Length: 318
Ligand code: ATP
Ligand code: MG
Image 1 (cartoon, protein in one colour):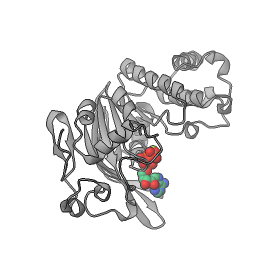
Image 2 (cartoon, protein in one colour):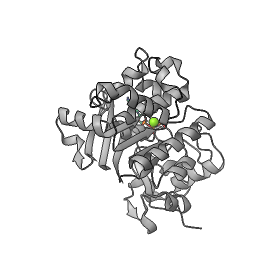
Image 3 (cartoon, protein in one colour):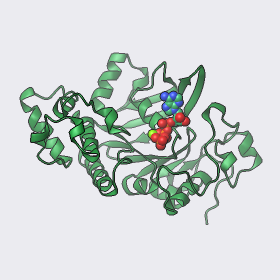
Image 4 (cartoon, protein in one colour):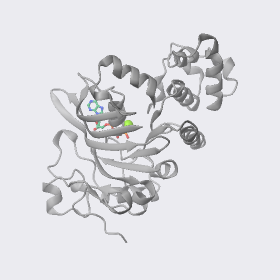
């Protein structure tokens, strides 16, 4: 199980501190999937990289909060303990598979690295079974190949194999299909869903695409400019959004906006994190903003059916 409590992470850039993630909390139980959605730059990958403790000085740092992996806070551990927990308990499928794969090493050697506890004699069999379960045919013949000999979709599957080889209990998939064609995307998404069920994985699924969130995840966390604006059961949040940003995201999707395009439904763009407005970060773009929104950050309040939101001027249900 993965529990993030009041996480704040900043980047350090040219003497300035960029608060990329502020006070983010979420809990993902075993066998459940939570979608983390929000437009580009909202801080989704920063959350994932913070959990993996991959944001460190001089690049940035976790400035506040706790991250519990199966009950243990990785932010309070010694370096050695933390490495052991992260190495054995969390699998990360990164946004860009090329960052997970080293072009100089064979597929076999890169997967083997993630499974130090498997007997040497059994390793090839385990790897072949894993790769074939991920849809790579004739895997045994391909173990000695290098990443460039695989297509983009296949590289993403190899990155998934590396994440799964350690038999993690938590899986973080950061836009695992953004770079792929639609057919391959659907295959990979189905696979992730199946793996979650089979292995009882607590899954954090990062995506731009609310359709993917709706399809694969029981809960959703909506981020804007580093903060959580709304969260709760996927069905509740998407059928009855309270935050104007959540509603705009949904409207943008119904207009079939491409994942990397600006939200057509909302004029303007997210604020610069270096000079955030005083109140709600969405206020400058928000169609229903009132004076208080520009002056004071709204607290998170509980709504009906398990969702919660942070807004002074919420959407009134139709
Ligand atoms: P995308 O959907 O494009 O992947 P994201 O939601 O994953 O976006 P992040 O990559 O977490 O967003 O970035 C959040 C913010 O932090 C952005 O404003 C980004 O410019 C900033 N940021 C990310 N990495 C760094 C860095 N190394 N140094 C400074 N700022 C950074
Ligand atoms: Mg990202």
